[in-house]
Length: 62
Image (cartoon, rainbow, N blue to C red; front, side, top):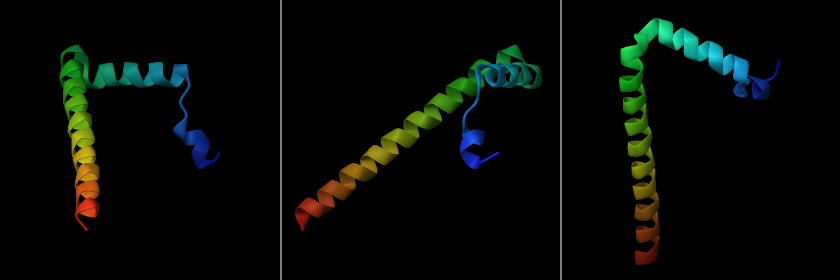
């Protein structure tokens, strides 16, 4: 098995992961976890876009 095949998950794999997550965290914790994950991704995107804007601004000043 190569590393490329490890990156792709089938539908059955995703269902198994969802069931395990439900068993581990319970039904009430999963929405909180998803909300935190979404906020983290949003913050990361905003920070990376800000970094790109900073890079463009510094190159224009030169």
